[in-house]
Length: 499
Image (cartoon, rainbow, N blue to C red; front, top):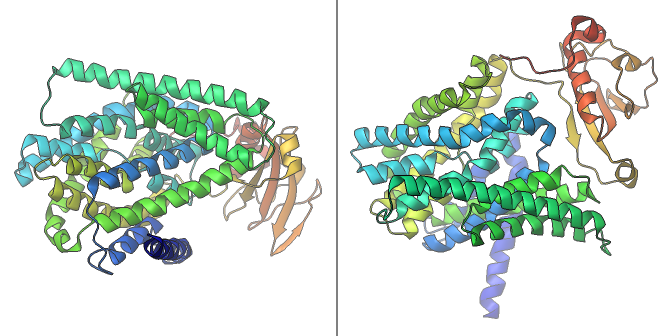
């Protein structure tokens, strides 16, 4: 066994290092790195190096493990102050929106492709879930207002739970219970899953705050372990483990835990590893010889999804909420699909549902085509809709003892062309007590600003803000970037303006 293990380790390490290097290359080329990982998997598979892999059940199991880590990282890095205002809309999008999307795509592929209703609804269910990895990787590169980013991230973290349940139900040979029983089962699994996540998050926060672990490196391991425990606890109770993971991650990520920045950095690294492994594995499972025949159903299902199902699901879900037309348009186009639909397609494949192989191939092709198109156009679309926020402050994850003792975060703020921050003196920012500009980078030279330092276009600011005033500081910076030093005279306090 040792020679085989050595070869496997050699190949695995080489693929991992190539994937890590591909992140920088994909950033320069403007190609989503997730597609590079898929291409790596296809390259080492039966159509490339000749490694044959067709174990859909193993792929399903490993895919679920990777999704646990990815969703946990999304919860840990989500800020409750930005998540709370959009939680209701995200919940509706993850339930009502999912139902609308399944029905619309199912009807479209049934009529246009002649599929039976069960397989047609499976197409809709598999494609109805947005992908957390794709959403996190894409949106965090763009400078957007907090509201749409928080909404899309929350939706991608929450909608996996109901979709997995529906795909499993549709993959079974037949329903032995009436529809109301199945609906009640879905409600039970979501409710209990959320409760398990709350219990795990609260208990984990209490334990980590009081544990005197001998090494700082143990805290990140324990935090991620708590989120995995939430998943396992949820599934043991026949509830939604994915929702439990996300809820537990949100509670842990917004608690003031020891070595919080180290926890976030560790979770980010694990999430990258999970994404690389998952996409390479899915690429390895794909058979290039079958993909040509899957282009037509992929295009039909994809067009039905992005032109009909997604906009209609956003419209229906947004009816009870104040969501402007421009924001609805962006949300409709930003419903990114990635590894999750492909992983979900392995469920009917492992259950040997008739037509599941064609479904998997179509979803694989659809993800490649539409991820490439959507991610490349999100930035220009946001600028055209005028919902970009180039002056939005972003957090820099740095683990330092002074910041830990202060319970503070380090923020970075750019002064883009057209921002009213240009020309404002540092003391005119009127940041709340506990927040201060500690460094200004101008023309490649950094200096500590004085109160009368005048900001200029192109400046980059480092701001230290304690946890209690961070939200107020960001609102103030947002207000000054729009109205200048006289923001308060205009009644401008940094609140989001509806489109």
